[in-house]
View 1 (cartoon, rainbow, N blue to C red):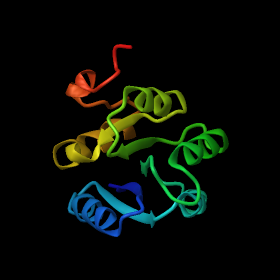
View 2 (spheres, rainbow, N blue to C red):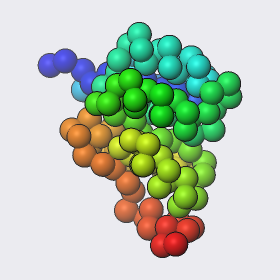
View 3 (tube, rainbow, N blue to C red):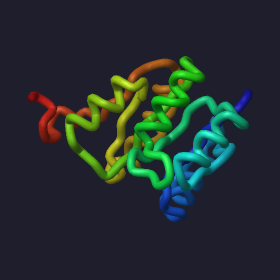
View 4 (cartoon, one colour):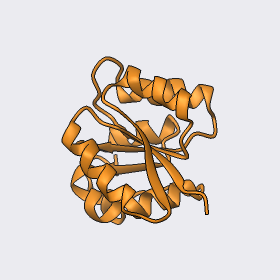
Length: 139
């Protein structure tokens, strides 16, 4: 069975390492690349064309929003999950409108990361159950 290929984009090395350890411990997936800023994310995505990309919203050099816009235009079938410390409803709506298939708060990664990756890989949208409780979601 071919493994699901994941790109991890976050400006914190510890976050990339932690996500990589969890993903690489799975028999059905592996991290194929990492990036610490938006420009590197674009380069890595183009070179690797992963099955699912985990994309931090707040990146240096090129913002996550701009990475999503650029790569979503170039690769309309790309599958992105935005990972962020922001729980702002406007940010969630913006990410989804730009083509993100999932949105995870970093506090949720321990329990939500693997189900999110698998769901998005299958072409499903993934939002945690409690996302409707986040601020501004009903406005």
